[in-house]
Length: 203
Image (cartoon, rainbow, N blue to C red; front, side):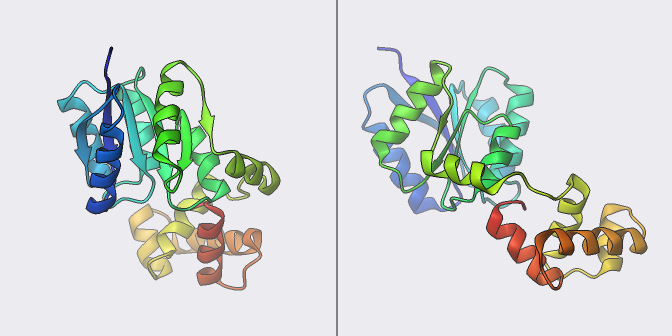
């Protein structure tokens, strides 16, 4: 039997070890590489021959969505499964845009995850059906890439001047992007806009 070689990226060590142990019980699966940070994923993939990468979305250093895009560029034949605690429709849309082959919530049974791994290797795309329905009902993010970038930068309480410096924009441009993002999210201020966009998975 050919063993499917997995890379598992998850910042919570107990969750990562539990997932690795559960997947290791499958006769045809083997976790050959692990990463605790998103910015460690590429190095882990380079160090081992990997068939499928299992990536958590929210990790320090780099999100699983960004890591998926990086892996897709360097290892176009590698399959990517996105795992998330948060069933946000916007995350699903962004995962597909990043080239993910599957999108599952972490509380799905281990057998379903193992099945998803086998299916993506057969060329199938596997998406949690509840999330798929929610994404269709919710529609696409109304934010442009630049609006999302500016709103995301405002999420840690940065001032317009600080955001402008980091993103190499004028303060007026930052103010305009934030104003538009606030309107599009139906919020009253930037803090509400950040919260609303995060809840939808747009950030």
